[in-house]
Amino acid sequence: MIADGPSRRAQRIGAAIAALIVVSTTQACSEGERSALTPLTREQATLMADVLYRNRESGGARFSLSTPLGSEGGTLTLSGEVDWTEHHGHAFVATSTSTDDPLTEVWWSLDRVFERRPSLDETLIDAGVSLTASVIERPVDMERRRIDQLIALIVALASEQPENAGLIMQTEGSVFLRTDTLRGTDVEVLRFGERTIYWVDPVTGRMLRFEGTDESRSFPIVVDLLETGERDVLVDGTLQVLAFDDLPSDVTARLTTSP
Image (cartoon, rainbow, N blue to C red; front, side, top):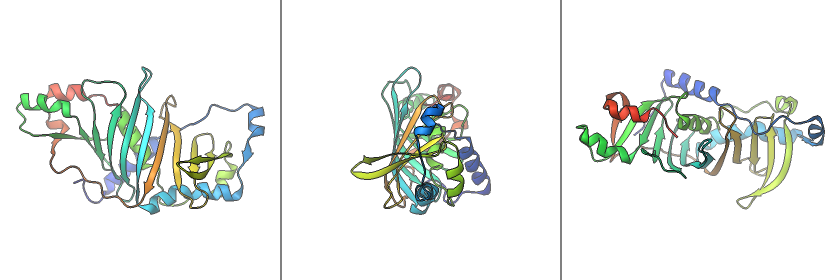
C-alpha cells in the first residue's frame, strides 16, 4: 500500500513538482487573430476559477492521458485513477512502439514512484533476487523521467482553493473558444491565458478534459477525466517492492530513462 499521509517534506516536494509543470496550447496569436477571439464573461471566468477546486473537492478521478511518445513518433497513454486528497495515483501505461524494458504499470505518492516492468523479472532472478513479480520503488525524477512529469500534471489538476476570476479575465489570452460536445455532454471550451484549455460542463462545473503540452512545449497532452469521486489507490499486494538503490547495477543502468 502507498503510504497513508504525506509528510511535510513530501508536501514540499509535491508543490515543487506542480510548479515545474509548464503547459502551453497555442502559438502566439497575431493581432488579427486576437481581435477575433471572444472575451470571457464573468460567468465563464468563474467557471474556470472553480474547476480545479471542484476536482480537489471531488476527491479523485478516473482518467485517460494521451501524448506523443517523442520526436521519433508513437503515442504514450496512461489510463488510471488519481486520489487528489492524498496525492496518490495508479495507471496502466502503454506505448504504440516496442521498447526493451516496457513500463506497463505505475503507482505514485508525493515523492515516490513505483514502476512495474515485467520484462525485468527474469533479469532480477538471474542476478540473485528472489521474487515472483516486482515493482521498483524510486524517488521522483522530474529531470530525466517523462512519466514523472506527466504524473505531476495529473496531480496538478486539483487545487485546494479557487482561482481569482477577475485575474483570469485580465490574463492576456483568456478567451471563450467554442461550445462543443464531449462524450455526450455539452461543454464550453475555455482558454486560460495562452497556456491551458479546459473543457467544462457549464451545468455541473466539472472538468471533462484538459489540454496542454509537456515542459518543453513540444508535445501536446490531453487528459480526459472520465469519472470523478473518491479513490483508494493501492499497490498490488502480490507484487514484491524493490528499492531502486538496492537493484544490481546492470538493472539500474537500463532504467536511466523512462517513457
